[in-house]
Every structure is written in C-alpha cells, then in structure tokens.
Length: 138
Length: 396
Image 1: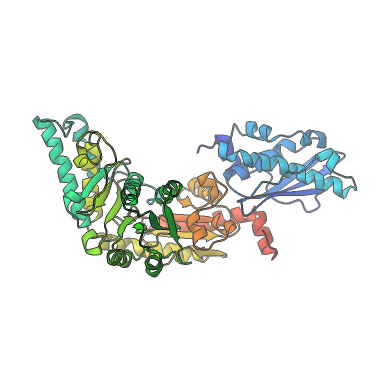
Image 2: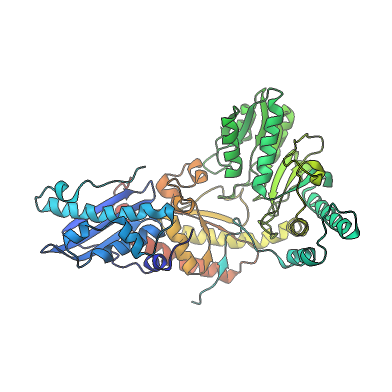
C-alpha cells in the first residue's frame, strides 16, 4: 500500500492538531471499534471559519485527511466548508489507496458534524443546511 | 540521538544471507541446467537439488524422501490440508480440526473446504494464546480426517504443545499437520521424535529467498499430487525445479537449524529488555504467554492509539515493525489472532509486533526504548480516545 508524499507529510507533520477551548462547533465521527475517530473543533466569526483544529485516533490516512481537511476549510466561509467533499481532500493529498478512501469520507463528515453542532448551538436546525451526518458502518 | 535503521520484522520476512546468496549465484549463469536433463549440466543440477533436500531433511530430523519443495508456506499448507481432505473424504472422513488463530493460509483453506461440504472445528485459544491439547482430543471424531495446528503463532509468537497434540492424534489415528513457518530455525524441531505427520515451512523467514518452501510428509502417508505434469518431486508437484531457490533453502535450513540455543541465548535478553521497557509505558499489555513464546517475538498493545500510525512513526525513526491493526490489512477488523485471545477491537487496533534476531544490538534496544515513549505520547496526545480515557469516560 503506497501513500503519496503529501499523505506522509501531513501524517508526520499534521497541521492544526489540538483543541479549541472556546470552539463554536465541535464534531466527532467514527468509532474506536473500527479503528478511526476524528474530532473537529471550529472557531467561526461572521460565517467565516477563523480556526480549525482536530484530534484523531486512526491510521496514517485518517490523520493526514484530518490535517488536510482543516487546512482546506480554514479561512473559508461556512458555505465553502459545506461544499468540501471527500474527493477534494483526496485530490489535495495527491490520492489515497482504495482501502483508505473511507478516511477521507470521515474527514468530510467530521467537518459537517462540527458545522452541525455550530448551528445547533445557534438555535438553528442544522438538518436543512448541513444534511444528515453519515456515521461509518461497523 | 542519531537515527538508526533497525529491522525488527523478521516474522514478516528476512534478508537473504550471504551464505545463501553465494550458494545460489552459480545456478543462475553457469550451473543453470534443468534437473531433468540427462547431460552433466542437468545431472549436476539434480545432484544439487537432492543435496538441498538432504539438508532440509536433516535439519528437521526427517528422511530426504519425506521432503517436497514448494513455492511457499501457503502452498505447503494448501497441499497438506486440501489433498488430505479430498483423499479421506472418499473414506467418509469429512471433518477437520484446526485452531481459531491459524495463519490465513490454513484458515482460508479450511473455510474453502467448508464450502465443499467439510465440517471444521475451530479450537479456541486461551487468553495467553495457547491451545489446550485436551480440547483437540475432545474434538476428534470418527470422521476426523486431519488436525492442523500451527507450531508457533505468527503474530504473538506463542509456541503450541505440538508433541502432546501429535501424541493425541497418533493415539486416535488421525493425521496431524503443523504450519511451522514461524517456528523453523527458532526452536528445535524433530519431526520423527515429535510424531509430526506433515509440516509446512517457508524459506524467506529463515534467510532464503521469497518463493520457496517445503512440505514434510511422513513416509507411509499418501498425499495426492498437487501439480500434474512432469515427474518432478516424485510426480507429486510437477514443474521444473527452481534450482537456485532450492539450493538456497538447503543452505538456509542448515544454518537456521544449527546453534539455535546459542542464538536464542543472545536474542532473549534483548527481547526481555524490550518487553520490560515498553510495558513501563502506561496502558500497555503484552499479548501472548511470555514464556512459551518465540525468543525474538514481542507483541504489545498500546491503548488509545492506532497501530498503523504507530508503524509509520516508527518508520520515520528507521524502525521496521508490524501491527495487528485493521488498517494494515485493508479491512475494518483488527487481527483475528488478537481478537482470539480476548482483546477488544479498540485495543487490538493499537498493537505492535516486533520480531528481532541476533543482529539486533544493545544499542538498537536502547534506541527503540528511547523513541517509543515519544511516539506513543505524540499519538496519544492527538487521540480523542486517549483524551476520553484520561477523563475516565467510556469510548465505545
């Protein structure tokens, strides 16, 4: 199984690892049984994601996709973040092995989960805006 | 601290040794004859193949006529199990006994036979990774065709009570096969003394090349032919002999099965130091019995982190190891071996296997023990599972 240089770079030097204490939205996806959990923290001002951090329990691809996803949404508007697809994460990492594509889906869903939490905290029903969050199957 | 390169994955494969390579080289360019040819070049090749067969036999305490060369351990397993099953099915014996934590070469072969109408009993293993011979005894039936139990487990290195199981099988008149791919060269094996009917081994685990293995079949056992064609391997496994690989295997077996105790005396203290050092880290456990274990093997679970990322970080530090995590296999389930000894999925995911040989130095051990805490702490610091563990929350 071959990881691209970019995946290895984001694994070895992950961007935005950690927590945001006063986060405006926190999302978590996955389960330890399957071997992947991603937790994402967002700071949002005026509809702009001013900071994003993550914590991930998982394989190299899980850590790299989390890292890349936070990079791709930082400084972007919520609307842009909602348009983030797993495919965009894969492309930004110069590809992923087929068995690791699910990690990019987790990263995409972790972002949506955090945005969903943001809307809930605002007293807004997230479902019409963010849609359903898909948990991985066991 | 200078970066080192430490190969600690000898259970996965080994480097071809200089002695093996030197023995093989002439067979590519000068002594390249077909062992079936009548002229000298061919006869020489045949002689070298037979010399290698004698070396393999001697290393196992067998007769040369009992050794058949194959392409790998998996082929040996498939041959012994499938062909025995097919033969004895005609006598109404359609039951096979194996264990839950065999290598997939055995497990998937048994699953295939189940689809062909065979019944398979999977013997459980204890939380120490050991099989109780009594369980084997109790599982044997009138229609049992074969018992196949691995000599030593590939992931946790636990050594099974092979002689006791062989004695039970002899008493019950059931054939006994053992996958000894991980054991050969690491513990003394004498197939005749130990009452083993069939034994699989692989070359690349003992410093021969990849793509060569052997099957020992005790004299008197009828094993149907695997590959139909020419008369190679006494007609049982047709196909022009891979002379260089066979010659290499002979030399590798000779070296691997000589001086085992002396080598182990060098390896064991280093392995023990590694285990003690790694278990000092919090939330760790050693998987598999500590005593009844291959001398170079250690398998440790680190809670709150995932095995593949651990391997990648070790790789960044120049250390090669292996893991029971799902991610290394491409499935969502972690190692069936670790689950079989009762580990929870989330703990099995965070496991590390190191398999060292006598080339590992004390400085290498120091280095591993120095970098591991850093790696483990780093991965745990970014793990939401660890975060919850530290808060005392459940994480399922």
